[in-house]
Length: 358
Image (cartoon, rainbow, N blue to C red; front, side, top):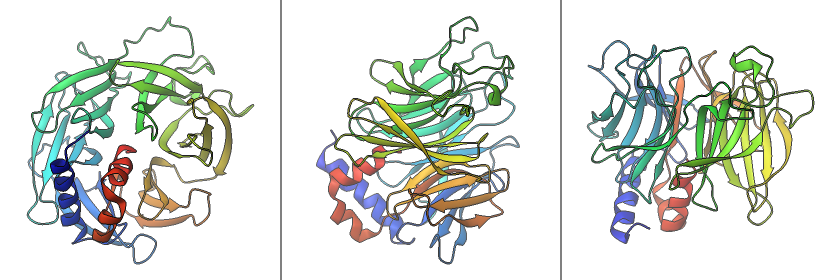
């Protein structure tokens, strides 16, 4: 648990940001412009404003997820393609985003090879980062799993590592994707794109089932929560591309929302108070390349990117109100701006709870 001084620093940082942006506005990284962009009044005027452009980073710079840090700074992942040996990937820290922005590199190179989904863990002052360099690149120092990076010192820790074994029985962890903190425990929901029981014999992403695991960051272990190969009879979920976990309607239950690129759908999975899978339902189908699912706690809406079409969409959790809110951008990570008044109303506990879900 952080001290009250930490809480006040966090609140002050968020208040400074929200003073120059509107309630529920969206901050996102844009691959097309190598920038951080503000999407103002989402669902209304949908105004796009450049906040910061990364310069001097080399031709292969590719901004990925963005996460708010205590005090008002932001961490941004950089996952260039191809993945090189040694790695050119990095974690950048942006300060003064709404005043005089600048950035510096927190940590870079191996074992940071392809940083994807990130969450900030208050208990250890670490960014937990999914690192999945993919199977297309031969790397002598390959690391697949979850890394921990201290945003202040740059210290990199190996939280969980999975060494690929093609002979390991399915279902098996393979190609980790999203991370989201469980709202009722210190565990993390963590998706795996491949390795499910469904397998056509072709190693391509669309030919093997995705899965959801529970990550214990202290023990450095994962446990299978559900194999998505057969939760819908005859329709395997094979390309999970987004994951959000919210408290469910029943006490202690979780609603886990996922997007799948192959079925182009948004699903809701219910988990009970023991983190056991219960059932699944389809929220929306026929979506445009739904990727990067996130939740805006200040508007109560889901936000997702459509990178194949360079769009951003939002919808209510029940599937109503689906609308495109930006085009001509390739978003790869989202953060959200609270109103100054909401900081006091939420209180420290509520605010930290919202942040932990990232």
